[in-house]
Amino acid sequence: MKDKRILYVSSEVVPYLAENEVSLMSYDVPKMINDQGGQIRIFMPRYGNINERRHQLHEVIRLSGMNLVVNDLDMPLIIKVASIPKERIHVYFIDNDEYFKRKATFADEEGVLYPDNDERAIFFAKGVVETVKKLNWVPDIIHVHGWLAAMLPIYMKHYYKNEALFSETKIVTSVYGQSFDENLDLEMINKVKFDGVPHEAISDLETPNYENVLKASILHSDAVIIASENVSPSLTKFIESSGKPFLPFATKDAFAEAYTNFYKTMGL
Image 1 (cartoon, rainbow, N blue to C red):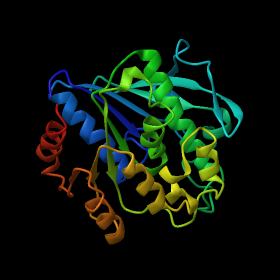
Image 2: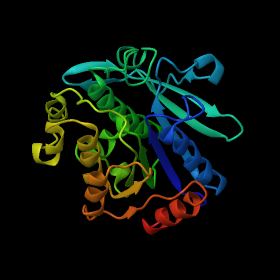
Image 3: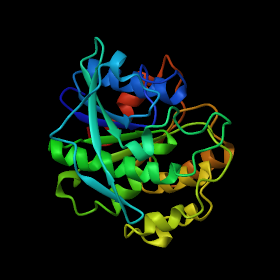
Image 4: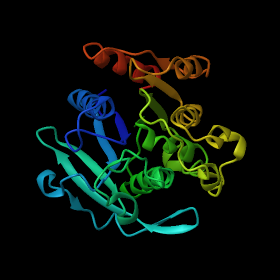
């Protein structure tokens, strides 16, 4: 994997957030590729519960300052960056006071999902792509982890479909076990359609529950990884019947070889 460029886009990454399946794999996989000589970038949201001082985040003025339109509203984009200690891996943080300043990730202290999680996902997807464009850094693969990052494949295939920078880029989505039970905002599909995405491409978002959000993401990906033993049978069946190349679940001690070989099947 030497000199191959892989962009990791994740809703959660250790050491910035607590350990879980998504945050651990969003660290372990980039570290593995970095150790193999690959060129790595990681993007994640800058939630308000990330300690900026301890993790030495700082704003990148040349990347910040643009406005992104979400549901016909201009939302300022702030970019911060840090390095994972000892690994020399840059992590870029997508920030906006309206969406990410609150002191939790996806839900309030009562466990109720934030009502604007759908808009946060749209903003995150656009923020990642716009920042990568400014960096002029062309990834061979974009590897998506976590449901809040699930809009990225959709926006890449529609909203950014004419961006020459990404003409050769492949998108891999890792699918994890269900992490919420409610629906996101029922207007989500209309907010995505506002950006020119056709209804038939995202009809699953008519009922924006966890599984349907992932289905929409899978349909717009070039390949899929089943990253958890706890993926539901119905979602597993959907992946298997999607016609996309997919990698079955690999255990902690086997994932390195499995993921590397899977990347190579995509032309790397």
